[in-house]
Length: 178
Image 1 (cartoon, rainbow, N blue to C red):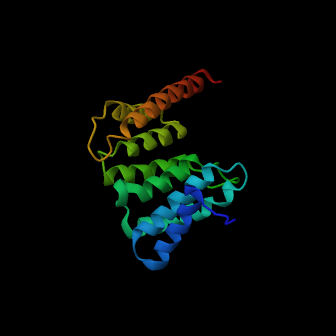
Image 2: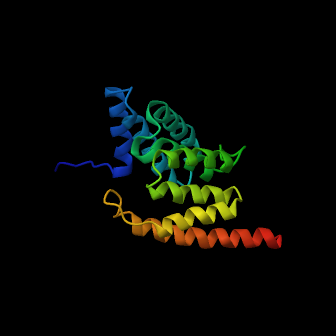
Image 3: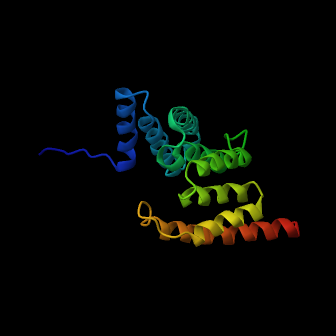
Protein backbone atom coordinates (compact mmCIF):
# COMPACT_ATOMS: atom_id res chain seq x y z
CA UNK A 1 0.00 0.00 0.00
CA UNK A 2 1.05 3.54 -0.63
CA UNK A 3 0.80 5.99 2.23
CA UNK A 4 -0.31 9.45 1.28
CA UNK A 5 0.93 12.29 3.45
CA UNK A 6 -1.07 15.47 3.44
CA UNK A 7 -0.42 18.66 5.32
CA UNK A 8 -3.19 20.58 6.93
CA UNK A 9 -3.68 24.02 5.46
CA UNK A 10 -2.17 25.82 8.45
CA UNK A 11 0.89 23.55 8.24
CA UNK A 12 1.26 24.09 4.50
CA UNK A 13 0.85 27.89 4.47
CA UNK A 14 4.22 28.69 6.09
CA UNK A 15 5.93 26.40 3.57
CA UNK A 16 4.23 28.16 0.65
CA UNK A 17 5.06 31.56 2.09
CA UNK A 18 8.73 30.62 2.54
CA UNK A 19 8.80 29.46 -1.08
CA UNK A 20 7.38 32.81 -2.15
CA UNK A 21 10.06 34.64 -0.14
CA UNK A 22 12.78 32.46 -1.66
CA UNK A 23 11.49 33.20 -5.18
CA UNK A 24 10.81 36.92 -4.74
CA UNK A 25 12.36 38.26 -1.50
CA UNK A 26 11.64 41.89 -2.42
CA UNK A 27 7.90 41.34 -2.81
CA UNK A 28 5.52 41.85 0.09
CA UNK A 29 3.32 38.79 -0.42
CA UNK A 30 5.64 36.07 0.93
CA UNK A 31 6.60 38.05 4.02
CA UNK A 32 3.02 39.05 4.76
CA UNK A 33 1.56 35.58 4.28
CA UNK A 34 4.42 34.08 6.27
CA UNK A 35 3.47 36.30 9.21
CA UNK A 36 -0.23 35.55 8.74
CA UNK A 37 0.37 31.80 8.54
CA UNK A 38 2.66 31.73 11.56
CA UNK A 39 0.23 33.89 13.51
CA UNK A 40 -2.64 31.58 12.63
CA UNK A 41 -0.58 28.58 13.62
CA UNK A 42 0.35 30.24 16.93
CA UNK A 43 -3.33 30.75 17.79
CA UNK A 44 -3.86 26.98 17.56
CA UNK A 45 -1.01 26.07 19.92
CA UNK A 46 -1.32 25.73 23.68
CA UNK A 47 2.43 25.36 24.18
CA UNK A 48 5.05 27.05 22.05
CA UNK A 49 3.03 29.96 20.66
CA UNK A 50 5.19 32.53 22.44
CA UNK A 51 8.22 31.22 20.58
CA UNK A 52 6.50 32.03 17.28
CA UNK A 53 5.83 35.66 18.17
CA UNK A 54 9.26 36.99 17.06
CA UNK A 55 8.88 35.30 13.67
CA UNK A 56 5.41 36.79 13.17
CA UNK A 57 6.69 40.20 14.26
CA UNK A 58 9.70 40.09 11.93
CA UNK A 59 7.64 38.94 8.94
CA UNK A 60 5.08 41.70 9.54
CA UNK A 61 7.79 44.36 9.91
CA UNK A 62 9.44 43.25 6.66
CA UNK A 63 6.06 43.30 4.89
CA UNK A 64 5.45 46.82 6.23
CA UNK A 65 8.78 47.98 4.81
CA UNK A 66 7.83 46.59 1.40
CA UNK A 67 4.19 47.73 1.21
CA UNK A 68 2.32 48.73 4.36
CA UNK A 69 -0.98 49.05 2.49
CA UNK A 70 -0.93 45.59 0.89
CA UNK A 71 -4.17 43.68 1.55
CA UNK A 72 -6.06 46.72 2.88
CA UNK A 73 -3.33 47.59 5.40
CA UNK A 74 -2.52 43.96 6.17
CA UNK A 75 1.05 44.34 7.44
CA UNK A 76 0.28 46.96 10.13
CA UNK A 77 -3.00 45.12 10.86
CA UNK A 78 -1.06 41.91 11.51
CA UNK A 79 1.63 43.60 13.58
CA UNK A 80 -0.87 45.76 15.48
CA UNK A 81 -3.01 42.74 16.32
CA UNK A 82 0.07 40.89 17.50
CA UNK A 83 1.05 43.70 19.88
CA UNK A 84 -2.55 44.08 21.08
CA UNK A 85 -3.15 40.37 21.71
CA UNK A 86 0.24 39.07 22.90
CA UNK A 87 0.87 38.87 26.63
CA UNK A 88 2.85 41.83 27.99
CA UNK A 89 6.52 41.87 28.90
CA UNK A 90 8.22 39.84 30.32
CA UNK A 91 6.11 36.96 28.96
CA UNK A 92 6.00 38.36 25.42
CA UNK A 93 5.88 41.61 23.42
CA UNK A 94 2.29 42.65 24.15
CA UNK A 95 1.67 46.40 24.16
CA UNK A 96 -1.94 47.49 23.47
CA UNK A 97 -0.95 51.13 22.88
CA UNK A 98 1.58 50.09 20.24
CA UNK A 99 -1.11 47.86 18.77
CA UNK A 100 -3.50 50.82 18.57
CA UNK A 101 -0.91 52.95 16.74
CA UNK A 102 -0.25 50.23 14.16
CA UNK A 103 -3.93 49.44 13.67
CA UNK A 104 -4.59 53.15 13.06
CA UNK A 105 -1.96 52.93 10.30
CA UNK A 106 -3.85 49.98 8.80
CA UNK A 107 -7.07 51.97 8.91
CA UNK A 108 -5.40 54.84 7.05
CA UNK A 109 -4.52 52.40 4.26
CA UNK A 110 -8.17 51.44 3.74
CA UNK A 111 -10.92 53.10 5.73
CA UNK A 112 -13.58 50.96 4.05
CA UNK A 113 -12.11 47.62 5.14
CA UNK A 114 -14.00 47.20 8.40
CA UNK A 115 -11.80 44.42 9.78
CA UNK A 116 -9.35 47.26 10.42
CA UNK A 117 -12.00 49.00 12.54
CA UNK A 118 -12.87 45.78 14.37
CA UNK A 119 -9.28 44.97 15.30
CA UNK A 120 -8.62 48.60 16.23
CA UNK A 121 -11.67 48.49 18.51
CA UNK A 122 -10.31 45.37 20.22
CA UNK A 123 -6.92 47.03 20.74
CA UNK A 124 -8.53 50.22 22.06
CA UNK A 125 -10.52 48.19 24.57
CA UNK A 126 -7.36 46.40 25.72
CA UNK A 127 -5.72 49.82 26.06
CA UNK A 128 -8.68 50.88 28.23
CA UNK A 129 -9.85 53.48 25.70
CA UNK A 130 -13.42 52.27 25.96
CA UNK A 131 -15.29 55.15 24.31
CA UNK A 132 -12.97 55.12 21.28
CA UNK A 133 -13.39 51.34 21.07
CA UNK A 134 -17.17 51.73 21.10
CA UNK A 135 -16.97 54.14 18.15
CA UNK A 136 -14.93 51.66 16.12
CA UNK A 137 -17.26 48.77 16.94
CA UNK A 138 -20.19 50.95 15.86
CA UNK A 139 -18.51 51.61 12.49
CA UNK A 140 -18.38 47.85 11.92
CA UNK A 141 -21.99 47.36 13.03
CA UNK A 142 -23.15 50.15 10.67
CA UNK A 143 -21.02 49.04 7.72
CA UNK A 144 -22.71 48.45 4.38
CA UNK A 145 -21.70 45.46 2.26
CA UNK A 146 -19.04 46.07 -0.36
CA UNK A 147 -18.49 43.46 -3.08
CA UNK A 148 -14.86 42.71 -2.17
CA UNK A 149 -15.63 41.74 1.44
CA UNK A 150 -19.39 41.29 1.73
CA UNK A 151 -19.00 37.58 2.54
CA UNK A 152 -16.93 38.48 5.65
CA UNK A 153 -19.20 41.26 6.88
CA UNK A 154 -21.78 39.17 8.80
CA UNK A 155 -19.02 37.49 10.81
CA UNK A 156 -17.28 40.82 11.46
CA UNK A 157 -20.58 42.30 12.63
CA UNK A 158 -21.19 39.36 14.99
CA UNK A 159 -17.66 39.70 16.38
CA UNK A 160 -18.09 43.47 16.75
CA UNK A 161 -21.37 43.05 18.62
CA UNK A 162 -19.76 40.61 21.07
CA UNK A 163 -16.62 42.78 21.30
CA UNK A 164 -18.69 45.87 22.10
CA UNK A 165 -20.61 43.99 24.81
CA UNK A 166 -17.40 42.61 26.35
CA UNK A 167 -15.72 46.01 26.20
CA UNK A 168 -18.70 47.64 27.91
CA UNK A 169 -18.46 45.05 30.71
CA UNK A 170 -14.75 45.77 31.03
CA UNK A 171 -15.50 49.51 31.20
CA UNK A 172 -18.14 49.02 33.90
CA UNK A 173 -15.78 46.83 35.92
CA UNK A 174 -13.05 49.48 35.67
CA UNK A 175 -15.50 52.20 36.78
CA UNK A 176 -16.71 50.16 39.74
CA UNK A 177 -13.14 49.33 40.74
CA UNK A 178 -13.54 45.56 40.48
